[in-house]
Image 1 (spheres, protein in one colour):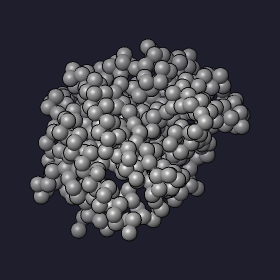
Image 2: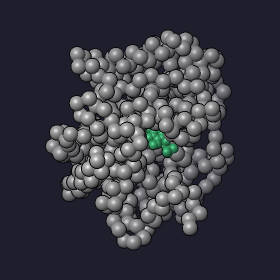
Image 3: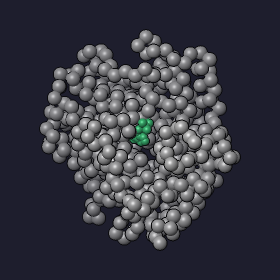
Image 4: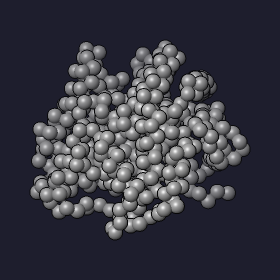
Length: 446
Ligand SMILES: Cc1ncc(COP(=O)(O)O)c(C=O)c1O
């Protein structure tokens, strides 16, 4: 009997034993193609020599020294790399390093509040985010997300966050509007919410540039984030871009917001940053935010024991260098286009695939019961969980999830293969999804 408190204590999961490039191997020798990097984490596969060597080299030097006393070279170099490669407005910005995406989100929310306090704007404490977003599992991050099912048991513990609708074209775009008109209409819901709450009370707006876990790789409509930026500037609200899942190359650019032609005030990044070799996340604060602290208390009002951990930072720096040296952003764009064409060729006419969406190597398939009415399968059918197990059974890791329709109903399969994915692996990915869809749909449709 296992004494690990697993996610499901009655259903045993295989024990992973080793890895080979883009494959994980369990203790029985079964190989699994990692087509989702867990949850969009393992962007370089599992056995990258340069990252492993950088971690070993750092271990030989020093692992931990408390940030209340010391900085370390790996953290300094990593921060410089990220800030130098960050979007506009980060020239004298700074990065803080934490252990998980949720921790980074908590720190980003607190940083936004600190920014306003440092400027004497004490009334600004409200957070606005989007329905059907996912920002993490700690209490502040869970409250910020918009996934009802995950929030429900903890509702009495959650802070009051105000939610606007997501920019979700498949379900919200009207037939009589262009993508641009749709983008503006959805962005304007932020202005309505700010006015409703009282502009002088709103601290920050939080959004994923490409919605991941809850919406299944939904990029925003054209012009959406430009309008969001204008609204935030007009009302003095900070814009936090949660790139925990879609950042660090996943969309084919280092930052997903680069596709939008505007930037955020604070970024959170995590998964691709450590690529699974070490747990690490980061909050990047723009010059505007840092200036407010510099002109105010001069202190960061946040701290954790394991901040700026030297081994995690050394691993992340090596990940970024591999992405740069091997020109993997170009690979993400090329292989991403191939994956998109293959998914469209295979599933565009599939009677149960309502929508195919994504960017770079970040793709989602929304599964529906009725393609004409867009009706989802009932939540009780547990479709995404069944798909996940069947795909696993067939030797592949994917990230199906539920709740895209209303936080409870709606199923999608998220694919986030490594940036090094080959053409043959793309073929296996599409074939495996097709086969598992057939198997599971034939069971649930009975
Ligand atoms: C957009 C986004 N933000 C935050 C998180 C939380 O990250 P973590 O699971 O590392 O705490 C996730 C995790 O999936 C995420 O996708």
